[in-house]
Amino acid sequence: MRLLLAPMEGLLDHSLRDVLTRVGGVDLAVSEFIRVTDQLLPNRVFTRIVPELLNGGRTAAGTPVRAQLLGSDPACLADNAARLAELGPAGVDLNFGCPAPVVNRHRGGAVLLDEPELVHAIVAAVRRAVPAPMPVSAKMRIGNGDESRMLDNARAIEAAGASELVVHARTKAHGYRPPAYWDRIAHIRASVRLPLVANGEVWTVADAQRCLAESHCDALMLGRGIVADPGLALAIRGEAVPGWAALRPLLGHFWQRTALHVAPRHRAGRLKQWLNLLRRRFPEAQVLYDTVRPFNDAQVVQALLAEAAADQPAVRGAICEGS
Image 1: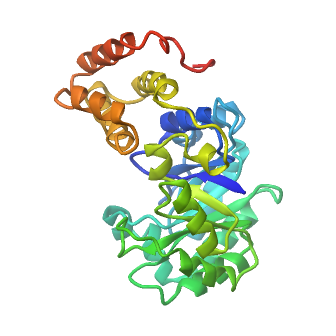
Image 2: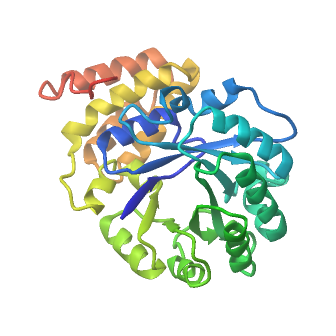
């Protein structure tokens, strides 16, 4: 079984990738998207969004990171993919799944699923532009407004030479509302031969087992589920899962990393965003969330984090080596 860490714009950035891959169980991470419009991007844009490119294309824990591109111009995407490939990612991924209105209005993400011919042209152009040994993968939803072109898109991606396809088992119209329609992925599995990865609404080990059974896949991509429960990948593998005492110091590590690239006025929001998901799984996260929720001043929140850590001397200073 392969377990991948999802790209999640506005949530799962390189700071959180660093933390979650330190916990373990993840085979590959995919970055949040790099938007390509009508120009060749400078290297600093790629390395800002995917700083793992400065570390051999891997997180500090050694997990390979595939960099994701989003756009609709095959030639421009190909040029940028070629430049990106020179920086040594673990592969290039193409976004055909983003449901954000601002992205869709500019002809990016899930709206491209209404144009399988364009999807094929994009994948084929990028495949030609990067070295043959480098994986070129794609992530799609089962449709834009409906599922009518689901198989057309999957076949287009396969015919264009993609090495792997991740399928989020909802349409753009479904957004992120439960349920995810894992059985639809089985229809794709019966129609294409390239490796498939199932994605969508996997929060627990039981969800993972049902998703694998219904999708007929042997690989999963984890998103909000692993953000809410960082030990989820280990649990799916049947390995020992860290409790709150082991995870709590990683909040401090996340805060330190966030401070390196997020303006002070936004740092508290990033921490609360993660705690808001963690409290689904950990009562202790609810307590900490309630403590920091009223405050937005970065210095105040940092002091509250330090105070919370001081209340747990057994785990004080237990942040993973290399932080």
